[in-house]
Image 1 (tube, rainbow, N blue to C red):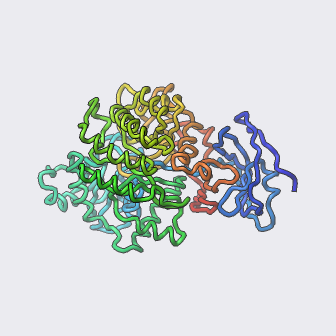
Image 2: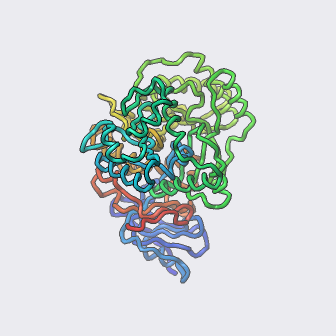
Amino acid sequence: MRPLVCIRSLLVSVVLCPIVVLAQVPDRILYNGKILTVDEEFSIASAIAISGERIVAVGDNAAVRDLADAQTQQIDLAGKTVIPGLIDNHIHYLRGTNFAAYETRIHGVTSRAEVMTRITTRAEELGSAEWVFIIGGWNEQQFADKSGGFTREELDAAAPDNPVFIQKNYTIFYMNSMAEEILGPQLGDFYTGDSVVRTNYRDGRIVMYAALEHFPFAQTLEERMVEVKAFNAYLTSMGVTAAYDVGYLDGSYDPVTALYEKGELDLRVFYAQRYWADSPRTAIAAAELLDREEAFQRDDRYGMYGIGEHVYGLLHDMAGERSSEPFSQNIYDDFHTIARSAAKNGWQVNEHTMRDSTASKMMTISEEISEQYPMRDLRWTLGHVDLISKESVERAKRLGWHITIANHTIKPRIEGIASPPIRMIQDSGILWGMGSDGTIVATYNPFHTIWEYTAGKIFPDIVKYESNEVITREEALIAHTRSNAYLMFMENDLGTLEAGKYADLVVLDSDYLEIPVDDVRDIRPVMTMVSGEIVYRNANP
């Protein structure tokens, strides 16, 4: 066996010297590909060797294939691009599992006619009188052939014999005639005899829960496990190999735990400590919870760590409301109570901060806390940051905060500004990661998020950023892999394709670096691997 040799990428002037760190003969080798390692030099290789759960070598075809024996499975990539498994640092995972096995998705569909076809097809699959549900992940603007909300007439035409309920977000809902007849009496003053119901954030829950009384939720643990597996299958088909759930009131984690214990959890799932605090008394209770619980209750595959995205429930800002100081000092005091306990006990904070004023105040509180309980090494993050200023980003960097950016492809652009200011954030040098904020208010296809910030557009093809405000594809991929691994305290095991790390990877149907940037949103995985096991394979690559 000849020694492994260094390779030099044709696209970047970097030498990659693969190193074997395990003595085992590889179980599987992928060769003849374009492997984006996303290491510190963004090196590119042509082959990768895997033994068990880990990568043992990355390099050129000949050197890596020389490691094989007769039992090694060798897969010819035929020139396809390979990237590290994509990590979603902000997803409402458990909520997604509740709907995955039954809902109809229209994520990224830019044809209104296609939506009607999907509704018709789903109604025919279910049979008459069964409900057709679309639960978020879309916006009226995204249809290139005809934008706008859905009318009663077109929904009736698409599914004349089925109730159709379409949720846009937490305040806007559409229905056909059959759904209106059933739900109208339950909605009281919210129902005006129109196919669209518009309400506020609080009262929208009334509409949503009235409709969901007719959703065929699973009734047993085994049925819930099927729903979880359906959601996991969708995520891995999109190239997601690890997810962090920042939800709090979306049900029980028992079915996910059961799959994990059976060895059937096809991706890495982590979740924040689950509590809800919205008063001084419950803030104290939350702080006491953090005092008595361990901050990390997980392994490399599954478990709980961190708090957020709402450390304190009443501290919930919105980008559309630009008041410089919308919250009372009492609310910030209750946030302080919980955050102090988090710092004291080693908890990561992941906080929802759309307005610059919110981010600034939270950083001031963290400075005060750090005098007694330093938080710099806890990797606290400011999430969303739609309206954050350059001054606040620089301050966050100095204090040891990081940033998480979510998907906005179905949200109307804020006129006159780059929101969030992605190029400024990247240029600041602060570590930041990319996530979805799926499920209801965003699509959770990671290539939609990457397209948004590299093409500078939202659906269907609306320019959001000027050309000098976008980031490169390399920067976006780093944010969705290597940086997220760091935010999850897993940088030694995930985020890059290097010897010694877990073999979490995605084989793509397109050349990520070379296709037109507008085609990035249409990239589809051909194969997804987690810990060296194939968890998704496209039957028609």
